[in-house]
Image 1 (tube, rainbow, N blue to C red):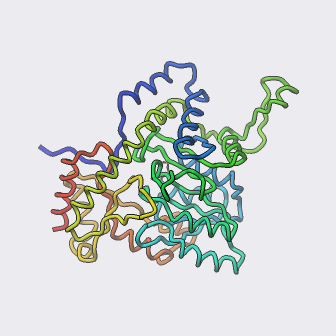
Image 2: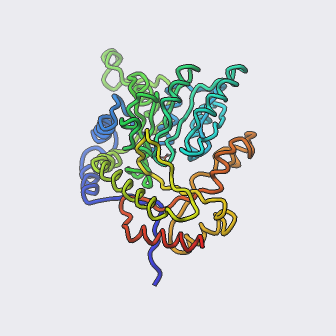
Image 3: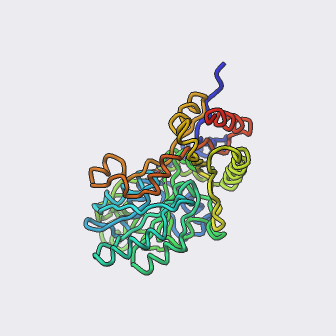
Length: 388
Ligand SMILES: *Cc1c(COP(=O)(O)O)cnc(C)c1O
């Protein structure tokens, strides 16, 4: 009998989630009803932000954030290579030129020292970025204090791609509170911390930015009370070119129901991460670095193979042995600038050496709230055998 496959990530859906979605299905509104604003208000309150704008994916939210911050053709957007492609693609949707800042060896997040060096050079050649997208890799906040200080000095705006990090804390405050970033984005894809099936949200403390994102989410249309009084109650105006990036009420109801268990999810993930640390202590690998300033949401548990294990049996063999044993390991991330579509723009190996070296060693182990200790033991045993 072959044991079941343990995935690297998995949603947790309970009866109350089904009930919440069913209630919407039986209501008058499947979209543009009350569930979306209710979910937006709940996430904003939970994270300590004044405004939240839901969308049909975090990819859409990132695009809306770039547009609201005025990113346009001829501008520059910088981000980290150690992320999902969406963190970079949002800039290209707006016609901006992309560049990548290497990561810190410990945190695996965008390195503020590398950023400072690059900004210094860019200032001399008048090539400063308009936006920097900082990604909270694996659920652990970036060094947002340092990034904010550089933003204030060089005049760029900060989008925090916290797709991995709802429920995380930085300097004892919730990620998403807008103290450091201009706009923070969450993803609700099923492998992330909480899910809406597909979905995303952008948080900020600026009414103007929130209004602009909400308008662009709905075709660039606005319904203005004064204009309706003049023309009639049917009247609306498209004042700029927008999109249909709306979240449905079914999705929002699921999200709201999931949000009520956010603390429970983070606690379960942290407990399993701590347990991995102990169980893996004697193996030829590095367990995740712990930032004293940040409480991770533990979206991912990433190990890095030591040089000996890299040489023999090698990362690929370890990966394949684990997959053959039914362990859904994964690799996060292939450096974005090495994707063929980015190489076509001129990027090549050597552009971000720390991220490129990290990529050759990385392996993501299964981690999700429903992972049992017995399953976790199976992962560790399989890893031990794969490394032997
Ligand atoms: C998942 C993810 C996204 C995209 O999220 P979607 O909701 O799937 O569009 C963006 N950035 C990062 C870092 C992610 O992990």
